Image (cartoon, rainbow, N blue to C red; front, side, top):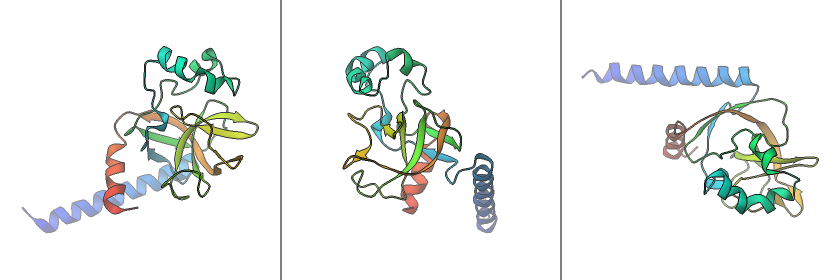
Length: 171
């Protein structure tokens, strides 16, 4: 085995990945064109009918009906390890967005981290994890500091390599 050749191939692969990531960033108009779901906040703990029965009251506070929720993207939730492609686009009620949170909004989450939650109101702009009991607010204010974009494609399980890389590097 030629160690030097292996190292060159690894460096080349990393360089190509960085180039593709930066190209996607420019193309999609966001600093975070690809991310991974890292928490259970968007998971549905039952099939839709049973999940909706448990969550209907929370969503009715935002005038969201079962029929409306069924028209939303990712109406079956998102799961830890899902890869998400993010694009800067018009945000509507029901969209799943990626944003940076205000300090202190979530335990052990830094303002440089990203949150993936559903928009439950556009006036004011409020989000909520599908599995969370309430909206993302702290002291009566929205937790959203800056929005990276909305989820346009979710791919199950493909987020695990990104999660592993970030855990290994501590980024």
